[in-house]
Image (cartoon, rainbow, N blue to C red):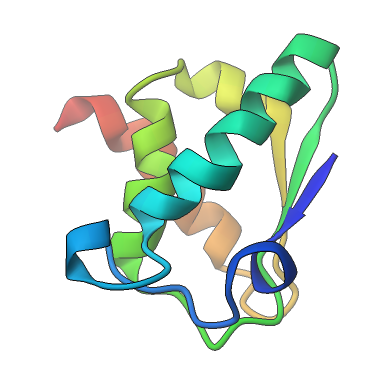
Length: 106
């Protein structure tokens, strides 16, 4: 299973919430990430998130999407299920992992 943010969502990911603008992290979480994560867990599969091909990411987008998922599911389950492809910006996988681990500390 895989999600390409650029192909399946937007080449220009936006802000944190829908109220702040189009293609938000909240919208990505609700329309793509969470449903695909649930399907991957249910089917015992990995979910690869391809972060390449966009014009970049606001930290608020990444935290809303991946931190938002981690506020609903255990970080360990997420990190066991999701993998990242981020050749354009290799540091993103580590940044997102931090958002997942820190989500419930807030």
